[in-house]
Image 1 (spheres, helix red, strand yellow):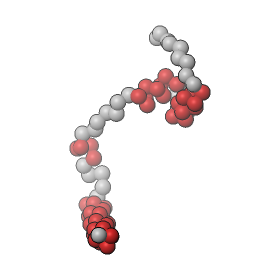
Image 2 (cartoon, helix red, strand yellow):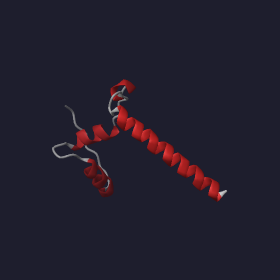
Image 3 (tube, helix red, strand yellow):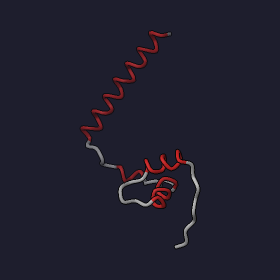
Image 4 (cartoon, helix red, strand yellow):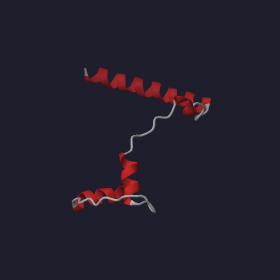
Length: 76
């Protein structure tokens, strides 16, 4: 595989090094960071939480919404 030499500033190198995973080359890091994220179909997430967990989340969201509305009304 052909290679290219890049010149980057030290701060850019430090940022890239922070993103680098153990055992990963800088080329692999650059590809991983810059490669567009693959979109997963929504179906992949079906069933990820139980009905009971989902219902609890909906109750929490309803409570938070109610609290936020009350807070906004106090400010008005």
